[in-house]
Image (cartoon, rainbow, N blue to C red; front, side, top):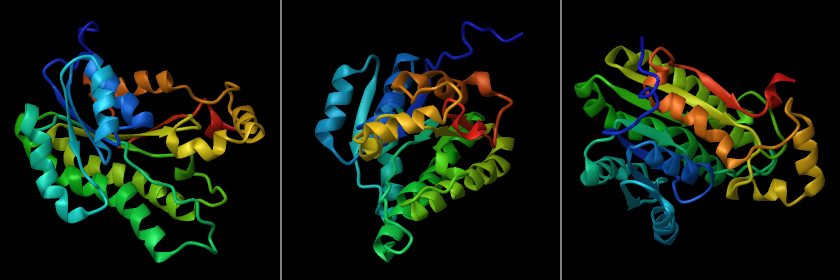
Length: 253
C-alpha cells in the first residue's frame, strides 16, 4: 500500500514552471515549492520573478527567457538545470491569447500563439526528457483550456493551440510513459489572471461565466493546488495522457 503521507511530497524533486511570473503559473510554482520541490521559474520579467521568489517558501531560482524564440530552447534547458539539476517535473503554464476574431487573425498572431502555447511545451520537454529517462521518473503537465473542446469568439488561434495540447499530451504519454514519464494536462476554467483580465473587467460577463459552471462560481487560485500536486507527484503514478478539467463543471454542462 502506498504511503499516503508521502504520496504528494515532492522533497528531492526538481521542478520547472514556465510562465511563473504571474497567474496560474506563479501559483503552480509556489505550490510545488511548498510541497518540497526545488523550483525554477521561467518568464520574461525579472522583477515579477523576483517578487515570486520573495514570497515563496523553499528553494527557488529564476531564469529570464523569451520563450517565443525556439532557437533558444536548448540553451534554456541548460539554464534550467544549472541551479538544482535537471528537472523531474515540467509545468508548461506560459501562454498567450491574442483574442483576434477569425476575420482579424494575422500570420504574426497565429505564429506567436501556436509557438508559445503548443510548440514550446513539446520542444522544451524534448530537451528535458533524457534526464528523466535516466532516472525512470518524470512528470509533464501541460495547460489546456476550456477552448480545448469549446469554441469561443475571438479565440480561433488560441483554441487551435489548446485543442492541439490535448493531442500533444496524449502523444507525449504514448512516447515517454514507458520510461516512467507521465504526461497530463490541466484545463482551467475561468480564473482571475492577467490572461483573463479582459473577461473579469466585465462583471456581467464574469457572473455569466460563473453561472455556467456546476458549482456556481469562477475559479480561485487555490483551486489549482490539489489537481496540480496530484499530476506532479507519485499520486498519479498510473495516470497519463489525460486532460483534467479544473473548471467547476463548466464543460460538464
